[in-house]
Length: 271
Image 1 (cartoon, rainbow, N blue to C red):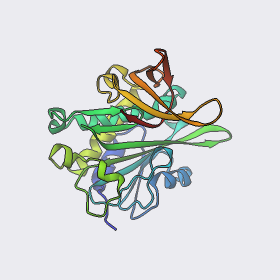
Image 2 (image 1 turned 180 degrees about the horizontal axis):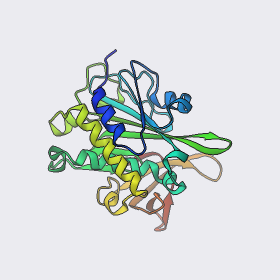
Image 3 (image 1 turned 90 degrees about the vertical axis):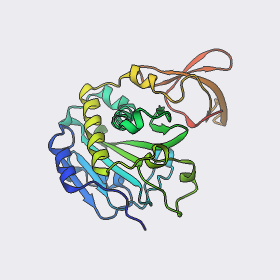
Image 4 (image 1 turned 45 degrees about the vertical axis):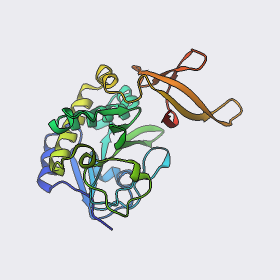
């Protein structure tokens, strides 16, 4: 199995020394999932960054597999102690979009991306799209204690370099910074920019919806998604995506002309 990309120890130390939210760090040789590790050892870690040289069972939203078994993959997990970090409930409600904004701003800070004709966009609620190919996604999970949110776990996957010949079928439709923009940034530079950008977004506390909507992948497009109807049957819905509102919902126009605010959607696809 290939080792994935990891930043240097000096970059990890620099990132944690300059962060209000990520005070500690863990670098593992191999783990099934950095998110699962963060949840299991959250008491010991407190708040911090968890990285690994090999992740064998990474996953995305809705239980999907995130394949990081190639040399161009970069994954990390951010662990927040909610009380110590001072995160408010409204931040918790918008954390997925905050992280997506932070990721987008970090990548746009590279001139080869920001000046490219291959637009970098945010696909609600958590993906980063280069042109028409996904290059990054996040998975946000909460750890509860005494029935209250205690720890916030944010897993991030980013395709930086080239794929190898053994990648999964899902990745054959994905992209990377190298494949979509033709350059290969150092993992240290990517890591430091990501941590700095996400820090700034969390310090602000709420997503910049003007920024997000100006870089939204779905806005103005016809999409389909699956959800249960009143009879608990899965049905396909076709709508037009309009914008992302201040509750982090995707506002859509239904076929009957009515607007609806989606909190979540399963298998959201362009038509």
